[in-house]
Length: 441
Ligand code: PMP
Image 1 (spheres, rainbow, N blue to C red):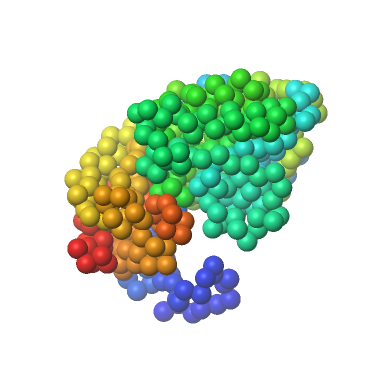
Image 2: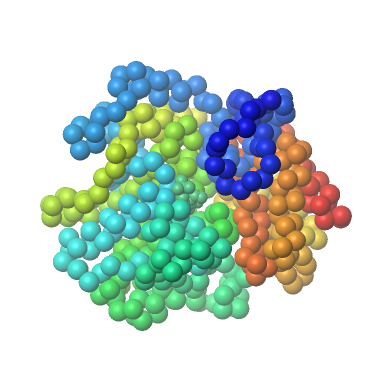
């Protein structure tokens, strides 16, 4: 039995079980219950739990020295991690700045974009454009860029110049158009917004390459990112891709931008970068931008825990596991199998509106009416009930909450890449069982 203490849990939701140990795709709690962690927590544990290689690499680094101030020293492990990431990164991305959380990576990227514009002599470019229904982090800059209104509302008066365009969410297109004939209207919205604000004021555009936490996973249509890239180039606007969730092999490619054949100016990583062993995030940037900023006085930025060597050791060990076990390819191959299993079991379900994904990142959108895609009322808490039922049956997925009955809500299925087929069958059948149980099908 766990003794309750003084931890500030987010909501007083009763006593949480205490996690005792974990291995592979399984977590064990203090009551001896086993959970199949089919979302790697918040899409973090990409390589499976408690990988001994990561634990050993971290211990080794800790015992050699755990803290060196990042402006006074570099360390071999941080240099090696940046080099290994550069080898897999999109074209031209060659320099990496390390932080701890995804929110910090996003903040860092927003600030770095502004400094690149300053270094180019574009002093009036300070605005960031992002998208509605997105998630970029909890800190005020990243939250201002976030487009999920329920997360923003209490703090909205504190945001200045927070500009959003509609996301590429074809299932519920903001313009009421069809994907075959829309001409990528939602990408054109970027051009309109840039012209509306004045291109000379816009620093960067930020978007999740594949939407994750707030759209229950939504890969945009193939032409979306090339069109956005073209618009950014036309107006001197930098493109920041947020791959905190979708990077590091999660979509079956090292970087999700590979699916779209484009390279960003800046890219953020987090979550799976260290396999979840320690907090580690990064911003990758094009060599030419890095050189420009360095030549014009350097990046005005820095944190106590930037470039932390123990976190970097976890990151480097995680990259080696991905390489040695060919796990990115595996995420791609096994991901297709997982998608097919979800389709097979759930596509006819009267309360499943859509199933979509890439690699090991899938979303199952729940609806009240299948024909009209009418969502459940948020107050009905259907998603929470399905999630609770699954959790009590020992299967963990990740909730993506809808917006007051207006758009979809769903469950994110994003297991560690090492999941095997019987475990996939277990999770799919538990999900179907939980839906039927809660919705009386
Ligand atoms: N960006 C994206 C795309 C994310 O999914 C998240 C976390 N869900 C963040 C940023 C913020 O990361 P963190 O919670 O580590 O600060």
